[in-house]
Length: 369
Image (cartoon, rainbow, N blue to C red):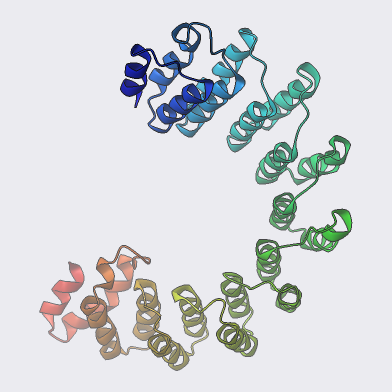
């Protein structure tokens, strides 16, 4: 692309600022960063002064350096940009804040934010605040995230669903699920037409399940569906929570609901969770029934499905059934699949010992391989 760009230039074609920007983007995506830097600083010369250096050219390379993990180069380029009197824009600052916060540099991020307001007089936008709120919440500084949330109004920035989802997630991670719930309840009051989405509710349900407050999780599910939202992986979160709380009847109700809703079907993870619960509770027969029902739903079992059952069967000394499951693993080539989890080597030890005791050395060799 660069050769063609230069060739057209040699033929007398005058490139526009857009052409130069696109070329910088291409070089950045290809990780041709030294070439991109040289190209950036040759723009004015090669365009004979018709194209001036703009903030977006620097933004492109700052972002490319960051994506390549070259944090220091991003910051150096920002300093160079200022030294040659190219004024950074809100996009420049948004990029820098994101880069700093992803690396946990919260103090530097605050300094850059202050520089943005006081030195350059650049007004933040909703994207700026989302970057700040996400960054500080992910760095376990939820109170700082809330400070920026409250500051949004003074710059006439409207919070969007991303802003709220970030705060809800941060509060839930900090164990403040009730505050998160109140925040969600106030969304529509603060911003007209702004409503929680599937992500908002799934985050709340996950946290209630983590606290084993499954009744509250079910209330949130009802609220979610009453708004016309279709749960997706929300169901898996809920099934796992109900399993861990040993609420088998309610779990069955949720599974029936999954089937009737038609929006999200049980998947391998759903069934593995239920199998694991039954095995932990010593209900091996129930676990085997669930395993068999996977075929009915046409849900493929993975190595984790088999490993959980094998462990429980070995504890019950039912090595005939273990061998049968082991044969299925090989017949279906599940161990060769790129998908699913791989069983731990220790899970094979009881099978190996049993096969050796029964003189089935050939199959024992397959276990070792």
